[in-house]
Image (tube, rainbow, N blue to C red; front, side, top):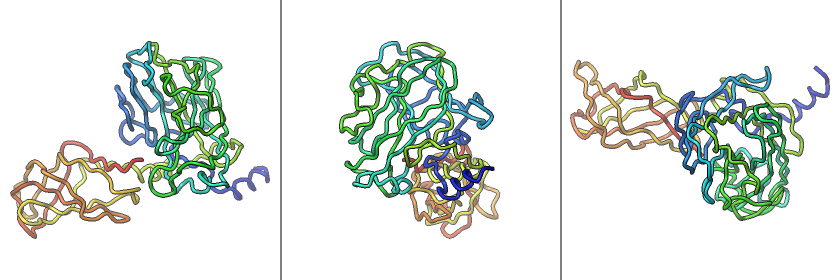
Length: 348
């Protein structure tokens, strides 16, 4: 390995600010036929969706080269040939405030940010690529051009750091990168590398990628980093990427069992170990639990009336599951989820 490359790696440390840039982790599913506004399949990829079409999301093995194994794929299954002024379809990755403090956004020392990625689309033309803040008051939009349809292309965009606005530096959303596949005129503008307060996330000649059934869009190798240069994509192991994603979303399989203790006549207090500390108190489904009393062959499937949080620690989550009745105080129970996996969600 050349000495210069060794020096680069040792002096810069971890460069990629965004988890799952190689699209390796897809905890919720590997395919979702009808994606919705929000997180769908691949971890840390949020879709803004407001239109009359239908798009499928999947984890693909169509990749630009041997450096990558997976990509995010969107495919149009129902077309929307006319995008209204306030309609849109775009993907975004949201970064936690505490992970981007070094950028200095909102201060006089704000640094440049470079976003690089591999992309392939069946529709050539202009696409909006924007950096924005958490409360939609600061936008910096650039145009990403697909030169040749159905061809992998490497893109790199550098944004001037924002010396104004409000940028969180805690456990809430710090900034996001948004890539638009279709965008109504209400959200189009001309703010190339200029920070504005209007919602400006796409150029006036933005393509309508939704116009034809079968259109596809792939992305992988997404890297957001400090500075004005796109460096080589920083690969992490699958285990490292998974752990970074589990700060925001964890799956507990429906075959898992947890020890609990009866509290009064209605509730069971149960502890769930966490793979890693979560960003904030997660949401937990309140249906689909089954309890079994220790030393007794009888089990219950009473409907859950509420799930509340007793405590959340660095390595476990303690829930109080209210079944309404049939519980004995201070008696040991075993609890498991019977109808589906438990999704612990603490997303941005």
